[in-house]
Length: 141
Image (cartoon, rainbow, N blue to C red; front, side, top):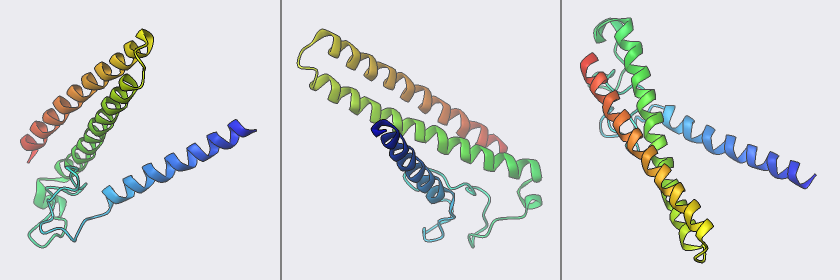
């Protein structure tokens, strides 16, 4: 019974954190100095689709409905890839903590090194993926 309660608490906490983060990122940030500013390096979903008054342009003014939709999709993909990068950094920190607290045991140190290595690989893939998305996004605009 205790395990079921822990699982439910973990699930509720996860949904609250992820849902709150998604809501924060998805909400138009009109308090920024400019509409295309970023929040923690995350682009707004409407980045590149606004005029000077922070109003979203008509799809025809952007280059058609296809360009409009692809711009939104690329902004969302970039946000998700940057989130993967932040999570990878968290795993590097967690691996370092495991390494420090392994008390010199070879098995614990090996698991910590593997965690750090996998997190660095994930971080590199995430960074290259964000670069590719930015290149494609620049080609569309």
